Length: 567
Ligand SMILES: Cc1cc2nc3c(=O)[nH]c(=O)nc-3n(C[C@H](O)[C@H](O)[C@H](O)COP(=O)(O)OP(=O)(O)OC[C@H]3O[C@@H](n4cnc5c(N)ncnc54)[C@H](O)[C@@H]3O)c2cc1C
Image (cartoon, rainbow, N blue to C red; front, side, top):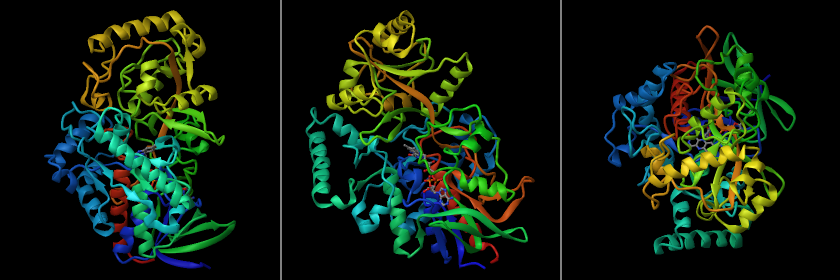
């Protein structure tokens, strides 16, 4: 006998789950969100919250001359795997509408940055230099009042003083505070906000100015609370209830007690994929390393495993199993483990290279994180050439962030003490410390430095694309990504093949209905976010290609459920 009954039961309170709940409510459905942990927001709260949605209202307003066909040409020219091509077309056709619909209900969520990230392959056919990505609008966490504490905190390594969130422009101003009055003013305001938070809002234990994925989730959570949509924490989906082949409810455990919740129009799985499921990773991505995901450790593949137990098909056709990123591992002051994703801040800057165990460069360091790790995998397959280290010199460390280390002497010293940062007074000494042949490393650096002085990386083309240069140092010339590694001491950080989420998941149709082994939709069962197979088929054409589809397919799934017959 069931305890409760709703129209839609949603498992997971990340961006996909919360968006689904708000859309369901707007369509007159009674929805409930069950969340396994005591925190709302999952990996979405760690993220930049960027969405890649061509042809959105914001993109058109910002002057991007786009069309579905042009965006499709871009995807066709950058995604060699034709799997999910139809879903990509649906995404392009309906994406703008979905985001506009959600924003109509919640108020504005996203904006286009004045200096926006180009698509990741800006030279490809159909690419957009100004980009199609949108960024969450900054949010004041205090609007959530006491419920602010429900929100998952961001990764401290991506925050000022480990607690105050930053946007890309904030980082720019922080780095230029000593050179420009405008930047000094902006930095002053950030510092003042932090002081205020510490003095007057101590109860939250964190900064209240939210950016990126935290801002997005906070806005969605507030919209859910305002509508009295139950978002029930500490309540894990553990099973599905099926009647005559139709999914009509869920089993959950709450504080160790099992109960049932009926779902008259369907169940949406949005539990965040399987980056932390050893079993599922071994089964579907067995040749990749486990334990280096920068995602929330609660993304243990529950939704996927439960769907598979109920006949759902795991889709193996994507060319990659995860959205890859190099990750370095350190220990925080409180003893917890930090897994730092090297997404954008360091690899493209001048005076930095990446080397394998032979002391050789192996790829353009300024390329996107997904392709960088694919190159690491190629290296691994090519005679076990791990470990991989990022390497730089003293002037680099004074000017730029290096992994989790901001350009501050005190942080540098702490990182050296903890072993996260490795220092050599000479290239030879550093080579010994990182287990690389010293003469090979010297050769590599000498060759790189010659190219760096000319501003052309003949070997790997660092700084050769608009995307590379966007992430470089605009004040540095002739190439914003190239500078010689020449001033001692020299430094290294070890990086691993990590990820920011899984890219394989449940096979689903254009309504995000989960398919069975015969490719037939299981009535009443939907998968969104990273529980659904990525429509990018294992490629990473731009920032925002995971949360964009998460929101859009949540919209399409709920639209479909609202039209479904009641169970
Ligand atoms: C540092 C970083 C930056 C990133 N930046 C971006 C970006 O800018 N743009 C982008 O598109 N992507 C980005 N990503 C990737 C993106 O964050 C994820 O792909 C996305 O957040 C996944 O959303 P989701 O809703 O599927 O899952 P999540 O946000 O992880 O939410 C899933 C929720 O389900 C809960 N859950 C798990 N099991 C159960 C269960 N059994 N019952 C109930 N609840 C359960 C989890 O606790 C969690 O709260 C980034 C990732 C990282 C780590």
